Amino acid sequence: MYLLKANKKKLKKINSNKELIKEIGIARFLTAFLAFRFKHIDGIALYPFAILKKPTEKLIKHELKHLKQQKKGLTSFLLKYSAEFLINCLRYKFNIKKAYLNISYEKN
Ligand SMILES: [Zn+2]
Image 1 (cartoon, rainbow, N blue to C red):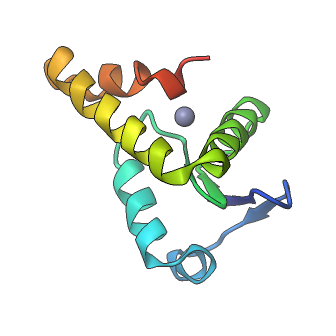
Image 2 (image 1 turned 30 degrees about the horizontal axis):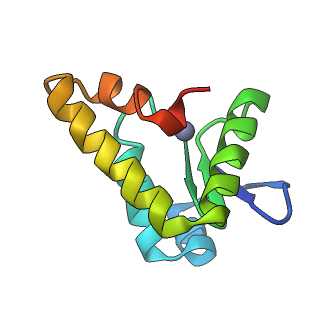
């Protein structure tokens, strides 16, 4: 697991869940833990941090983009993101992968 900080743009290797909780807090940890139960999710941005399973240049760029979007307005990002996800779940008959990939923030 790797941690990316919005302001530092430097990756930090995380060796245990305990270390991750210490860095990002329990609420972000639980969110990331739930998100990572979906195999196709390799990273999650929870401002001011992004947590990455296996960092690749493409994934780092993608998560930095989310951090930038969240910096502009965290609440509106979270509301729009969750609303689109829920609508997509209905639209794609609970195909979670399809619902996730069709969130406007996930399309670049
Ligand atoms: Zn994304």
